[in-house]
Image (tube, rainbow, N blue to C red; front, side, top):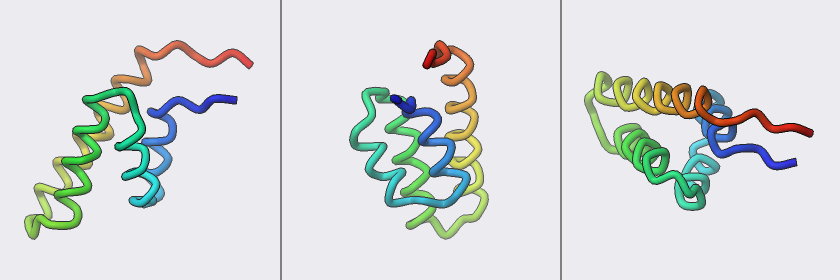
Length: 76
């Protein structure tokens, strides 16, 4: 069974699995998803401003939600 990148990104983001999220960023074919993950991980690790981290996290989750709404469901 193939799990779409958006489901993985959502899972890794919600459960704080940053290493797996980084690997997904490198392997995904969705450039926008990769950039959103990169922005979030950079803010999380290097930005002292908590609001910037929150904003990048919200932006990533918003994009994942948007992308999942426009991705066809997997039929098993």
